[in-house]
Image (cartoon, rainbow, N blue to C red; front, side):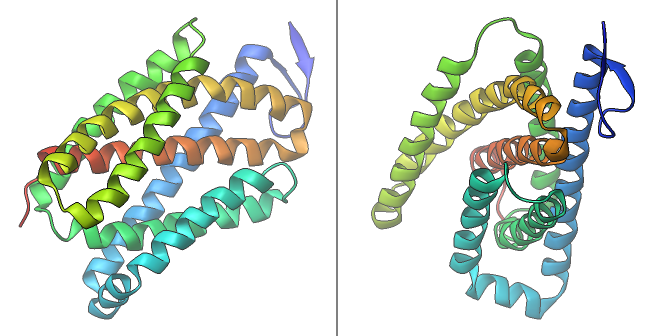
Length: 232
């Protein structure tokens, strides 16, 4: 069955092709964001002044990036596509500067090996989330509760400095973001439906989908790095 849609999907495409185009757009934005993050991290690590600023402003950077996530999520329905694009790229740059401080503590070899493992886990989980017929809404809700628990445990451990709690949180973190990856991948089909209904904001929906998967990948990578990364 063919349906007439606008410029985002093309003149006339069938439903399956339109969905594939939307998912490809999501992954293009996710890949672009990760590339910008990698370049920002590399630039921060190679420029001493930028690295020193990132260390001194690390809490400010963390709060700004969290604020951008909430702002994008809350206003994605109403903001212009150009604004959504700019904020996503800004977020990617700030995340790169934040991650540079973390990357500095680990060897290049362990960063590379953990990245490869993360890619494999993410790809397998995303494939499952996209192809499964099971409704993963309950999984998403459960993992979100786990995420809240992780945040609370991290705050508590700032004061306790417990290596056992840090290890347990890292294991739980891997499980949580594996589950969220599957859930967010399935949720792309819901975002696609909203994009078809409001094609003027189709790019916005692709960007918010890319942001969700970007966060899943980055957090999965960081928790695996805590478990298996080798420090300098």
